[in-house]
Amino acid sequence: MAKRSRKTFYEGAMETFNRAADLVLLNARVRLEIEEPDFEHIFYVTIETRDRLAPLEPKAQREFKDLPPSGVSAAGALEPLADGKFVLHRRALLDADINMRRGVINIPGKGLFRVERGGPRKFKAYRVQHNQVRGPYKGGIRFHRDCSLDLFKALAADMTWKTAIAEVPFGGAKGGVRIDPLLFSREEIEAISLRYVYKLKNLMGPFVDIPAPDVGTNGEIMAFMMRQYTDGEREHHALRGVVTGKDVRIGGSEGRLKATGQGIVYCIEEWARDRGVSLRGARVLVQGFGNVGGATAEILAALGARVVAVNDAFGTVHAEQGLDVEALLAHCHATPGNLKRTVAGFAGGTAISKADFWALDADILVPAALGEEIDAEVAEQLKVKLVAEGANGPTTPDGDEVLQRRGIDVIPDVICNAGGVTVSYYEWLQNQKLEKWTEAEVNQRLERTIKSNYAIIRDVARNTPRRTTLHNSRPYCVGQETDVRTAAVCLALRRIEAHYLLEGFSQ
Ligand code: NAD
Image (cartoon, rainbow, N blue to C red; front, side, top):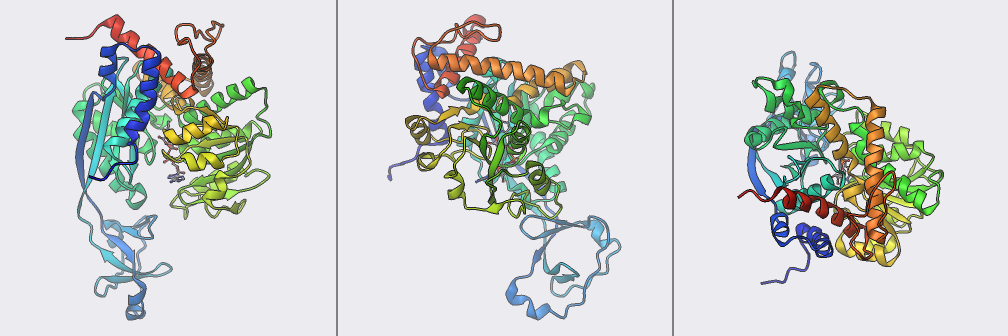
């Protein structure tokens, strides 16, 4: 059998766990309890897809060039998708004047299309519930092409560490659906979301497992999921905490949308304070310009930093003097034709390659896209002083070694992007109490939580046990220095272990 050369996501993620468990002399039974997830759910969701109009292949264009145009005037009848196709909604037929020849139609201003029949489709779905000793399972739902059990196991374990580090009373989970959401209509995404919750309903709840948005999902999808869970339930208003990251008008929290970015910036501020440098004029690279990357760039720019380049799944833009972040956000998220929500094509910057992006001269890199982007090769090219991990697992174990050797600081994901789950906890609290907090209240609490736990991790890494008005690192230092990533997991493991040891094990 061929030798497997690459570690799985989970094996990579658990290397840090094993190092930290050795350092904190983790209780042997606790180690067994948390080194594998509690539950790994794999299931399937099916939906009926709508008919689509697919651009006619070039070789058939001549044959249909004299096809009379079809008039489709109902608003929203044709929904554009990122692959150039249109979803044909049934309402399109209400007042349409259709001329079809052998399944081809001519839409004025859009071109010739072949009608593709919709029908039932099946998607693989996952939910990994890693640990719940500190509270209900908690973690995002990802809609993405590259999903696997291995990936969700790693991300769910990360959530267990993260909720412990942020000191929120939750455990860890992660899940999602293997799908490219850019290729489906809003109604199809709604159907997938509803079906996902239909299948998972007995396994979730405000005190059981609480999903949130992640890559490819958003507040609208959380609303669909909440509706599906609470539909027909007595006291349904008291069940709003079943998902977080909702729109503020239906029980979401002020500040949640930007919370992950805000938390990243609080960490970067502490790093800068520690190093005695200012963020004003600091040069920043951002990878991923969705919820996390966009908010981080916006907040850093407001503090006077210069976002000199942004890379996403479809391109990279660069401006030596700094990009106009507000204009870039509008380009991505408020331009109707920009279906991929990409920075590509932004007029306020120059297009560069991804390889050139990594090699740019800058102070701070914020990876806020997918995992495993910073491998050893990329880490060798970086010219930054800090990698602030907005994404989950953006650095491979090999990449980590190179960053350490080259003296590039890292703020690990489990503290750096913990702002999202922290404000998710505030949202859940507000839902329990039917309260509404202001953004200022939310951010004040978030800042205190992130900065005090950041300070504990820094002390654990340097082995400098201290008690200040903001934090107390004495119970967590392990008697020797360690890297920051391991220090963060040491903090998590001590907090998790306390629950097992003080509460005991249910038999
Ligand atoms: P999103 O879907 O809103 O945005 C993802 C961004 O990454 C997009 O700009 C996309 O173009 C880009 N991208 C995708 N593949 C890429 C590639 N191969 N190369 C470069 N760019 C690529 O997702 P998000 O919610 O912003 O999440 C981003 C990361 O942050 C993920 O790793 C997620 O797990 C993590 N995270 C999110 C939250 C949250 O609250 N949303 C909280 C904690 C961590």
